[in-house]
Length: 330
Ligand SMILES: [Zn+2]
Image (cartoon, rainbow, N blue to C red; front, side, top):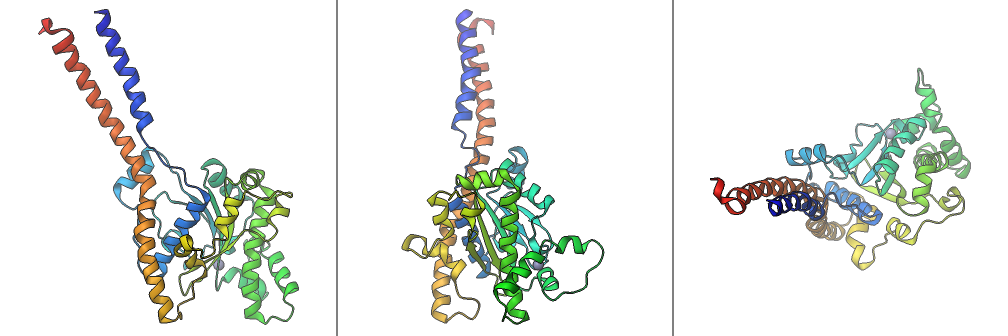
């Protein structure tokens, strides 16, 4: 009797622990891999080869039961032509997106970004501006705005002034392009300057903070990299090289496929380039999609395998109890 109880306790306590330990769960993604998943997804989208990953019921079930584990926090403009999940070819639970006109980083946006970066632990924080941004254009051209909009565009004013100061000879359209980029850096400056949590994670490389511009015509995202004065903004601390390398991923042999979307020619690319890009995306799709699916599906398998394992265990214990350890009671 004593031995039987001991065996039961042993199985009931240790087996689930073993199952939990063997369950892969949601894999953490490195900053390099996070950026790679974004660039590869955008390349698929820009070439009309989106795979629409992580949109099934099983994905919704997994992210409901296990919670969300997005791999990037993205601050983007509210502009309807900037659909973040679509343009990065990502799905449910992949991106923590903050959309606000002019992709500014004011109090609410910084708080939301902190939630994504510090609470959910996303390894990438991206400020995504875009071409033909109405908010930046309005400020650059001095358009009259009403209601609550002045308080919003106030965040863009310093960027436009900076662009105007640095490019005194630029015409309006050139100035808008420069202001769009300056506005991205302004948002990153606000994020790093006002959020200790984000700055701390950027300092030790847990999060890579990058600016990027989305071309609403070609569909391509040009990742600009880290803020030009990042070290200064982080109080003299330069983030680890691995994060820096990820941001400035030039087309070295093994990363050529992944770095290309950021630097690839727009729609009017030469046929040779287009063919090369097509080949690249096929490789990227084959590699990248399996990687994208890896984290969520393995997590889902872990959860369900755990449930099945426990049910089997209970059955086994029941049979053991009835048939082997105590056969006389039948
Ligand atoms: Zn915009």
